[in-house]
Image 1: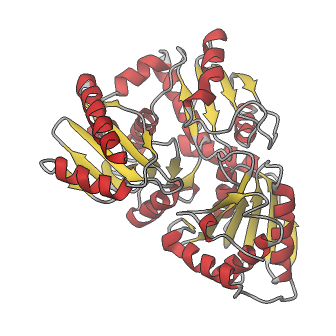
Image 2 (image 1 turned 60 degrees about the vertical axis):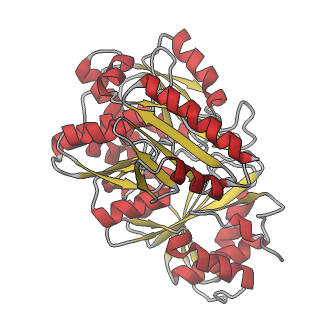
Length: 453
């Protein structure tokens, strides 16, 4: 029984089923996870992928055989999984999911309870040890006493917690179009709109791991086209697009335009700072101009983080931050264990629309402080040498090497980094001036293309 080391990523495990991850080698992986975690009460959740039921069954049987107390929460989104582990005080959790990846993939996300929030198991927090244990086959042996307890009612508790975070807001009845991509985000959107007023127009809400309409990855703009059209056709106030496991959420304005996640971060941050002044809010290194301005204008403190959900949760744990927003549309709350939660974000946006009584596109412009290029990806075997060349060419700027390189000038900046999950070099450019952003974006694209070879 072999395990491809490449399935162990920066902050989770992902591989193609059944070639890289299957019912046999997942046993070695689960044993290694349990060996690393130690005797625990472990939550098991799963997504809707075709391979998930059999992989989840193998995982539960393995844990029971090792003597674990398993809490089976069934098919849930990743935010609901995080909520369950944190809210009920369980020791650890394993979620069977490959997030937004194509249907052939599956994977595992691992968390454990920490002193100040959840600890996501990634390369720097135990995943490397799990990898070595799994490959070597050195792990815990069978023990008696393992049990399985099914847990229900979690979504209802999660909705209540989200309402509490936002302060039980008064919300007008809006028309919302949501494209759940036949994936897990449909669960929490449905649960939320059972409680709050609104006309919810559902697209692709039937759970289907074959993803018959489109891949559940809203970072791929082509997956948003049908939603954008539907929002305009329905004369809706807003569109929602979660990813495959529901831990990312994109918003579409009433004109059918994609709202930059940094604007959503800024709106939520301002609302939080009204109730919790002087708190720390974390923002990833890719785009910082707009959220930094808004946070500082409203008396908050900004801490920059590396890109990646495990790193951001870790930074929140370390800084005591109350909220974090990521450029890829992950949003994190202290009150959910410093993990992603999308229901409080939806509630906050609807509260602001109610308070301001104006279209979301107008609200977006109120918060915009800069212009962003959108992420530009390059497939190249020369990623590291391109980073070094960029440091040399732009050495008159202020260089930050937290995650790849980010170079700041007075009125523009760029981030250039190697992806944690794919063989790509990623470029992001922003400026306070749209023309300068476009000019520098073209300049950097041409520079990188000359070096890709």
